[in-house]
Image 1 (cartoon, chains in turn green, blue, yellow, red):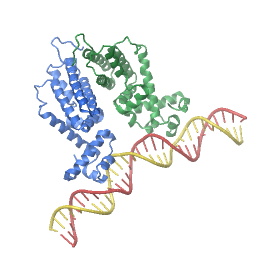
Image 2 (cartoon, each protein chain N blue to C red):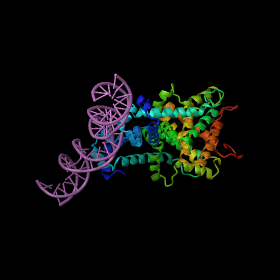
Image 3 (cartoon, rainbow over the protein chains, first blue to last red):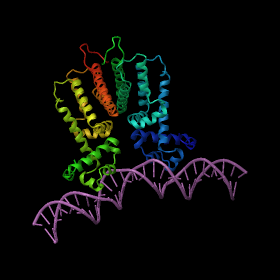
Image 4 (spheres, chains in turn red, purple, green, orange):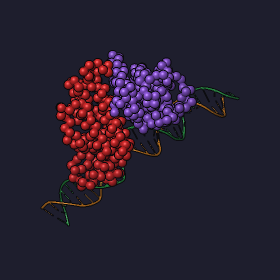
Length: 211
Length: 211
DNA sequence: AAGTCATATGACTAATCAGTCACATTATAC
DNA sequence: GTATAATGTGACTGATTAGTCATATGACTT
């Protein structure tokens, strides 16, 4: 968490610093982002940076926190943790929220994508957010298998990797199309791909599929 | 390509340098690998390194070349470019070759996985290996759509991303299981996942699926 | 006006790189 | 044996980092 001094700053200055940080993290990911650059872009002296933040990591985690809260905010009205929803309904909601994020501020979705793609860093961060070693999607899959929604042959580890990967690649497609029309096409692709996954993974009455 | 001086070296020394480089690249990927470390591990002076190679990139591309040739070698007996094979038969062969690689030398498969996961670097490298901007899998998908093997709704870009991602995650699973028995389980998962993809993506007689 | 405190500042340190270069050693030629 | 060329060598350069610190500024207190 940033120091008190940061929160004592005027909103405009705080915004300026955050914008610079988000730009830098979105462009380069955590490891390749440079404090010097954030400092240059937000026109604050380097010394001040370390008055506001413990270190680079401190600022990064703060940005992640903002992203996390924004994503959660976008999902609240649909009450994602509600048990009644099926695995794929939940996925559809998560995907819709992701698209909304990517449209609203592509930089934020880029930062989380870059994080998810960086396995060791992601594991580090997950330790804080998720008590178990499971991420959101993996636990969703587990629940689906437990309540018989998903076919027996589905491997939670593998399926969640697959789903994560496909969300990532779609998210990238949306971002690379700064054109709203193409983004609409990507939304359709998202949903058709979830249909595809549902079609392949759901448990059937005469269950023996996939194997 | 390494300089002539490198190829004039005794085989043991050349091996030692290559082993050190493969270790380093597998552990850290291209960008985070350090020439200093390669030099230290292979107990050659830094100056000599630059007598043998133009620069770090020169050595990396040479290692990639070795990996590429090894992978091709593993696929030759099955003649992958043969037109008769279906998309998913080809995929199965590629996956089998990938598993063989990962078992034989996990470091090599780790290097290529790290490369594939690094989009900008991968694009750079692809320019040299693939004349078009398509990688192997994307052109495979295109062929499958052209000859009516795959359903109309399949998007080549998306499908190849998806397949690449799932091969990556399985490859990682195999590597993380240094146990042969678990590797065998992963092989089964690989194949069942290709079945799953085939099941979902192939064109049906009464075609309207997935959409 | 003097004192006290939080904040501002940018030159500085120390580490880590890739890559170079002047000089040393060894092999080859005559 | 001496000249010439090829190789070996590690200290060095220059760039780029994250993070520090001594000092300056300004605001508020008495």
